[in-house]
Image (cartoon, rainbow, N blue to C red; front, side, top):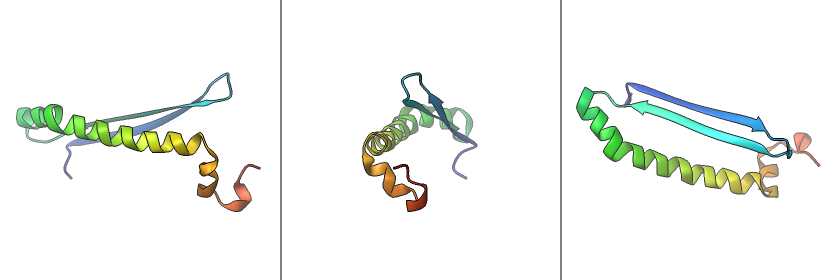
Length: 79
């Protein structure tokens, strides 16, 4: 693949208020040693961070509205 190392972890944690906190963490490392590390830090990290933030904004919008219902089968949707 493109990365010598890649990991992506979602963590959901219930809060006392009844809300749920989502943590979305990822890490990666490009091959080719120092050149790969420079590429990661100068180019890839900002691009990946922007892409993840855009995706999380969409998830937040869906989760905080009734839009989430369209992603569940009718029989499992909470009324």
